[in-house]
Image (tube, rainbow, N blue to C red; front, side, top):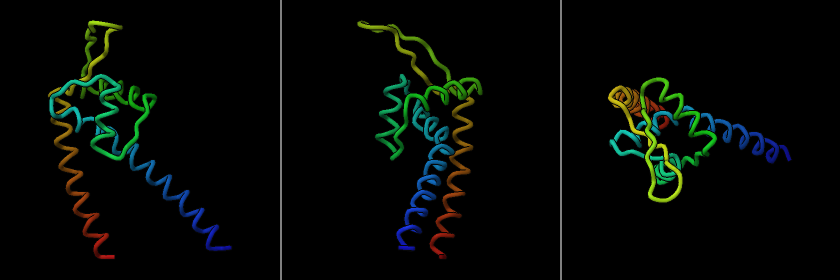
Amino acid sequence: MYFVIFTSMNKEFIDKWISQLKKGSLSFVILGVLAYEQEYYGYDLIQEVKKKTTIDIAEGTLYPLLIRLKNEGLVESQWVPQKTGIPRKYYKITKEGQSTFLEMRSYWAGLNQHLTTLTHAL
């Protein structure tokens, strides 16, 4: 019985840890998707993140993040009229966003290398 309780507690801890990792890396992921200089509107950006990662991002998470990235000057947006329906807001990375992404990618690569070394040593 003790093992079952421990496993349940462990699963909760792991779930929280995974959630924190996803939240902490989401800006990096969004900038990474946008780094290839393609414009995306929100729904397409969510689909692209799902396709390239295991992160399931909700609109309620994406749009506040895009606002923060825009306020930081890392992305910009524009309304694009559609042939049918309402206009869509498309997002693209700025030059500052490209530069920031490259710095983040460099840090991530170093961190990944250290974590890989650590986990192989265990």
